Amino acid sequence: MNPMSEKSFEEAVQQFFGLLASERKLALHRVDDGLFEIPSACFSLFIRRGSGHAPDIGVELVLRKDRPHCPKHKSLIEEALGLGVIMEFYGAKLEQRDLQSKEDVFIEAQRLAEAVSTFCIPFLFGQKNDWQKINDFVEGKIRRSGVLTKKYRLPKFVREEWIDEDGGDSCKRGGARK
Amino acid sequence: MRRTLLPVVAMMGMWLMLAGTSLAYYDPTSGRFLSPDPLGHDASMDLYSYADGDPINACDPDGRFGKNSSSSRLDDSWSQGMIQGYNQEMRAASDARASLFEQSFGPSPREAFIQQMERELNLQAYLDATTPTVHDPFANVAAAVIRATVDATGFGAVGTFMHDAYTGRQWMTGEPVSEGQAAANMLMTIGTMPLMMGGTAMRPAATVMTRSASRTGTGLVGRGFIPQLERAAGSRTITVIGSGDDVARYANKPGFNVFPPEAGLSKQELDRANAFWLNQAIRRGDTIWQVTNPQRWAKFMARKGKRSAYLDLELLMLEQYTGVKPVPAWVP
Image (cartoon, rainbow over all chains, first blue to last red; front, side, top):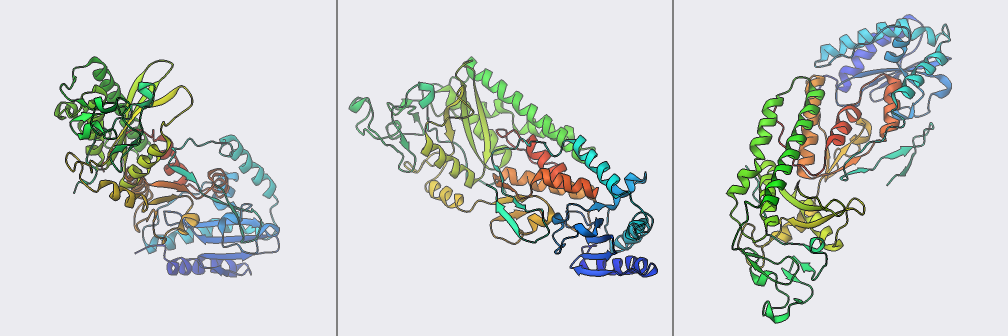
C-alpha cells in the first residue's frame, strides 16, 4: 500500500498544518488533489504531495503577486522557494526522509509544520523582509552550479519531447519542441 | 527464458565502402541484388542472386561473386588485433558502468558485475566456438561479436565495421538491439546505403546485421524473420523519462513505458529499481523520450531544495551510455 495515499496525505496535512493555521488565525484551503494552501496578504504557503518517484511532502512559499491562478501544475510556480532552501539561508538543514509507512507521513507532516512555524509563518505575517536576499542566495547557487548551461551528451535514441510551458500563470501549455 | 528470435548472423556483406566502390545494391527482403552481377554469367547463371544462392556457406561482398568458405583465417593477426581491441572496449565499458552504479547506489557488487561481463563477453571463446561460415576474416569476427552480444543481452545485435579513412584504423562494434530496433536499423541502412557516420573521416566499412535467411530457409535464422522484424518495428516501446508530473501523462498510454515506483521502498531502493528499469529499456532498444526540459527542471528543483531522480540518475546513466557496447544485465 502506498504510504502517501491521497487520504493519508490529506489527513496528515489537516491535522498538523490545520492546527498551525488555526492557532495563528490563518486558513488552510484545499486547492486541489494533493495541494493545500495557507494564504496571507503577502505570501502563500503551499503544501503539496510530491509527484516524484519517492513519496514526499513539499512545502513552498511564494509571493502573493506571483501566485498563479492555477497552481496545481507545480512547474508553473517557478518563483516559489522550498522550505529547505529557506532553512538553508538561515543556517538550518531540512533532512530528507524516507516515507515508507502511513505513520512516517504523519511524522513528516508534523516535522514540516514545526519548521514552517519557525521559518515561514513570519513571512506570512510580513514580519520578515529577507525574501529578495533568499532569492539572490538561491539564484547564486544555481548559477554557480552551471545547471542552466549544462549540455547533456545523450545517445541518439534519446529524443527531446518536452513541452515547454509558458512560464506564466495560465494552465495552457506551449508548443512541442522537436 | 532466453529469447531466441534473433539468433545470429547471416553474413550479408555490405563491403561497399571498404571495397571503395559500390557495385550492386542488395535487397534483403527478396534476398537478391537489385542490379545484375557485374561479372555477368561467369559468376553465376543468376545475375541477381546473392552469393550464388548460398549465403550460409559463401559471401558476396559487392555483388560480384560468392566466395566459398574454405578457410576461417581465425589466426589472422588483423582479426586478433580487432578482438583484443573489442575486449578492451568491453572491459572499459563495464568498468565505467560499474563505477556509475557504485556512485549511484553506494557499495555495489562491482567485482561480480565485471566478472559477469568478462564471462559473457569472452570474445575469443565465442570466436573459437564459431564455425566459420564465410571466407572473410572480417565476417568471422563479426559473427563472434554478434554472437557474444546476443548471448550477453538476450537480444539481437547489429555489428558494424568502422574504418577511419585518415588513420586506416578499423574496428568492430556490436550493438544490442531489440526486434524493433533491428528492423528499424536494417530498413534505415538499406534505405541510406552507403551510410555515412560521424563526419567525413569516419565511415562504416561494412554492416553486418541479424537478418533472415528466408531465401534458403536454413542456417541460423529462420524463414519469415523479416516480416517479424517489420511487425516489431511498428510496435516499438517508447520509454519516458522526466519529472513525475510530466511522465504521468504517458503512464496509461499504450506503447509508452513509464517507471512504476513501488510503494514502501526506501529512496535508495527506488533509485536502484529506477536504474534497473532504465537499463532494461536500453537493453530492449527502446526509444527514450525526455519529456521534461532538464535545465528548467534543474532550476526548479534547486529552488525547491529537492533532489531529482530524472537529473541525478536517469540522465547521468544515459550520458554514460557509450552507444555501441552491449549493456549487461544488472546483478543485484
